[in-house]
Length: 101
Image (cartoon, rainbow, N blue to C red; front, top):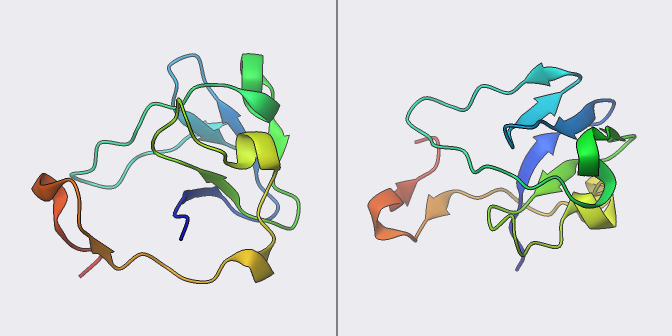
C-alpha cells in the first residue's frame, strides 16, 4: 500500500514556494492545528517555482520529500486510483492515534 498526502484537488494548481511550503492557486496552505507539515523539495513538475495543474486529478506528495515518487514526477492521481483514506497513524509513536477522531 502506498500512502500520500493529498495537497491539491481537481481544478487547483500547486506550487512549492522558496520556503518549501505548498501554495494552492498561489495562496499558502495553513497546516491543521497541532500538525507540523513537512517542508517539500521543489522537484519534477514544480521545480524552480513552476506551477503544476491538478486537472481532473489529485496532486499528492509523500512526507519523505527527498525520496518520494509522487505527483511531482508522476502527475496528478485520477480519482478512480484513490482507494481509501488513512484513519490510524502507527508511527512515529509520538503521533500514534486516530486521524480526525
